[in-house]
View 1 (cartoon, one colour):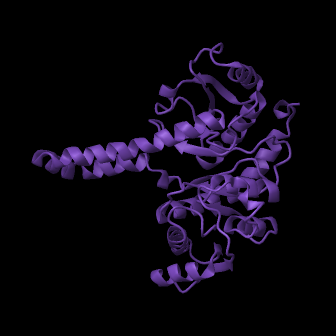
View 2 (cartoon, one colour; view 1 turned 90 degrees about the vertical axis):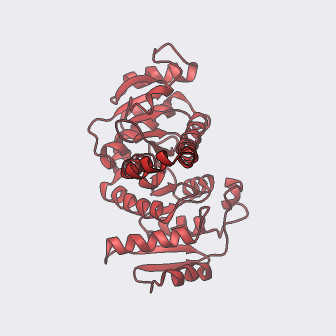
View 3 (cartoon, helix red, strand yellow; view 1 turned 90 degrees about the horizontal axis):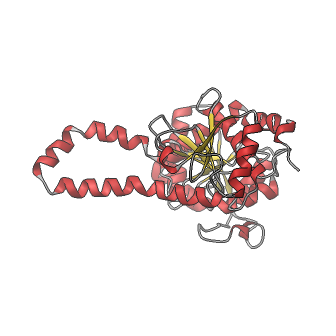
Length: 332
């Protein structure tokens, strides 16, 4: 765990680690990487004796708004860099960070490298829909891409969804301004042709209106579009929640109704809550680096840990290595 990564670090990270150990029981070990004094202080607040936890001290911290390259230039002793180094040396099975996404990606690429056959690693995120969570990727790792990159993103996303969400033969779609194959710029039209030739269950183009409707299990776009879309999607639940509270306060009848509907509202909110998904691994690297939301709470951290155990158990990287070594996914 990158204990210093995230808006609420190290408190949220430490608390999430402790909660996960309570659920997992014996046989699991979590390594907290960061400023030892700060980590021990948080453990003291939680009155946790330290069973199952190990602390690796490092002074450096990469801030959320610092340049990603800081991990290889000025801050080689940062918590994320040290965590990745432990992973490279085989001392841990995976790394989880809610910190600077770019820094986590740079550290992973420089210290772990890519899976053979992968041109570019990709970051995904789950978006809620009427038919369950949709994996959107890329959401920021690759603002500029080639058509062949999008096809590989779709392949890696399909593997992840099939094993983690247990969806057989996931539907893969290309996010576009229209459903027609002729719509879009050169990037999209060329990618569409490559997708049609691939073994993926490609269902064609989807528009923005198809996302929440669950038009596909995996939706592919470049990191520029994906990052904007993700941040817009994250703002919707906050707006709805704020406006709902404002309107309820205006009427005593609305307050009574909200109490009667409390359980229903809770279920709906849960479907749109990023905490339920924890995080998503950086797909395509020779290792496991899980990227969490910057404002991750202890619950989100706990869920990220549980999900990471599934990624390890399902051998996601082995499946990516096997599939992307096939001729149809190799491009000049």
